Image 1 (tube, helix red, strand yellow):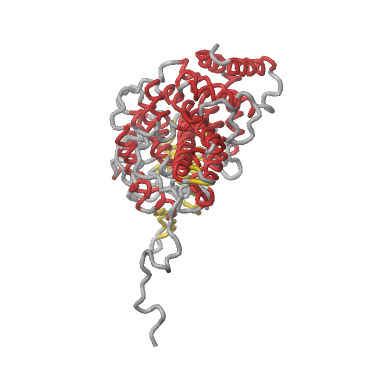
Image 2 (image 1 turned 45 degrees about the horizontal axis):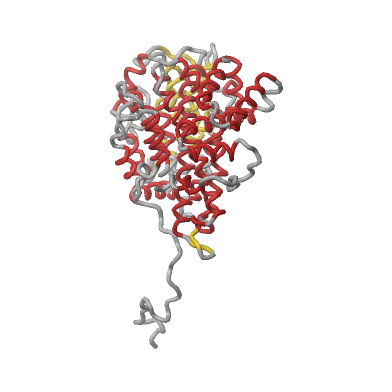
Length: 556
């Protein structure tokens, strides 16, 4: 008997076709992340990045459908951990999807880890932040080893013997992921292991110990025993770690392979099963007679690694700003193509309010981030270093703290389509809290700000000097700055109110920068919406703002 379906076909346009797909937005792909980013271009011009050669080309590459697909593939295929090979040898091997390696190769080949450390180039940190900002919009997880490798350089330099051997490999613009000893490679990546399960951010509570073995080609070598609770990117070639000697907490570079070619005593216990940042392997590690070289002075481990920490916190600002930017462009792309109640979403007043408010967040985050990048480029200017000392902690706290709510609100603009896993929005949402927690969570940043104010009071004066550039243009901003000054004059319960203080320091600085850099419609909207008080959620912009002009800066 013939099947009812045998030799039958459903032709397009036939009565059996249920519906046509319409009033749906197309995926955002094959667009230029640089050419379509008006705020970014304005900031680079303001900060004097005259040599922007290659940025448009890189923006086109980052926005290509091929590269965007790498971000999806790297997250849909999580890293796989193998403790032993098939013969029973302990290998501690983490395997990644090819897409992860393609993203790493793209970034390293373009110097996202090395640019500012090469021969003196004007605005090198601004340029690197721009490249990282675009690449982070593709996928966030692979940024972790890039950041740590970049940030390791000042710490590595504290040991000249170590630097002579390792720095040429760290600064090499190539990617060599092969599981072989560092001395057989021309390019390496560096990780970091500070926290332990009993202490977290309180590294003084660490119990890992180090005993001197003797001198070596890379300096004083120690035998290290203990554990690390969060060791991200365990396939890096070496890790900067903290351990206690008889003198005190010290910093060490611990390679995955010993100088004789044997596997070092780093034993990965398991990979973390994280809610976000899943393309990046994060692990728990035990150190059993692991060999490591002393970096910096014995007993001054925190001082040795602190600049690395500061640079990784700056990159958290870059990454969270990138997440905000990508969330907004996705929401605007959808709103331009989707209609409801007889009108495009982008043309509806309430949706305009939400989208313009989300864009204002990006404007403020990007301005503060790039201002700190400019300060990084002025290493010989004490005033700029004072600004950065406060700015990285304030910026890391505020920008990262604002990103989760921002991602959610942008996701809601897409409706049900925004929560489907083949859309980037769920990944942006899961990624959003990571930077706020890593490299020192909110309270740690708040306490760091208070510590900076206590140890170096000049940082606050420098902060107000920077904001004085906008004085007299907006009374609401002027009054907000005066209100902050009065808080410090009172000097009452600063720790209890630390989060509020940092919020006001961040908002007034963002507003001040936008007054100097952005179009007046942007600065006015930011000031009236952020400094007047009463804004509970995104989409509560006051009347009388030019929201169309603000939205025109998202995807021109």
